[in-house]
Length: 106
Length: 264
Image 1 (cartoon, helix red, strand yellow):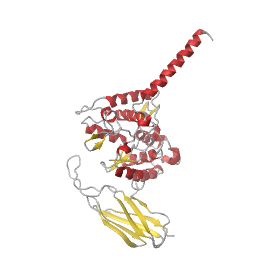
Image 2: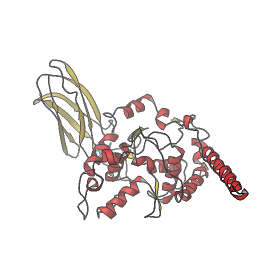
Image 3: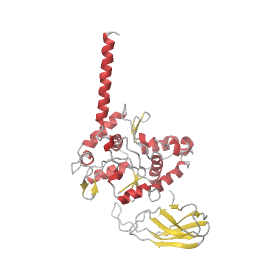
Image 4: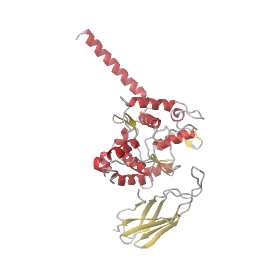
């Protein structure tokens, strides 16, 4: 199972903003649910997610229990140089995830 | 031509004409009137399904593609070892399931067929129903038939299961004493509290259901319907569920596969 699916247009014109879309695989357990025996299921959501473009942070988000499972995020970044768009995230359980996509600037 | 052969020819002609009429009458909904469940969904759900990037079902499709090429079990075979590239070899396969198989002497759905490959060909443990692994492969295989019309066979030995499915569909179940038909044949298009009643077709499954926050099989969806009418739910993988799946697939024949679909 992939951890995430990242979509960027290819190639992108220099100096122009381009759309970045990511869907991260995560149950985003709210902490308000109980299991079949009535025991409460501990909260486990992605706490923060960061996107770096050529090493520089271009987008970051703090997520909470109000966000659905497999969160989908969409934002715009201005194209400068070709390079990696690297995502990193961490959840309440301390599990870290990462994925990246290559950006080609024409 | 003797009179007896002429008589036989007439008889055969009359009988086959009857068979054609019987088949035509067997459709519970006429083909032009068939409406996929997505047409009853809101604009946001429709948008989510139609865009492969925002459709979360593709997490399972992509996961299934990886599993397809991963060796498993005692024989060390992957799905690809026998079936090659799933994108071509699995095209159209999902349109034919549930299907009668002579080896198992019964009707099996796609999930059961996948598990049979696992046990018989790979020498591995079967996957549990609704497990991420089984849903991934099933989503991957079903996705290869996206856009193709459902075309199950109810001829020959499959007929028995089909008839059982038909009876189940029209029988009243549970504390609410409702049959599938009362909602999905007689009242589709109307509202049940906040829900739009659909025609009850399974062409988008396995589908990502927002209520589940996950992908799920058609069996899970049928069980959810039975739960809703406070009826007894057959266990996942139970033959009753396969029978009803076959009846539903026949009822939806001609409707295109949408897997992985998105539903509320």
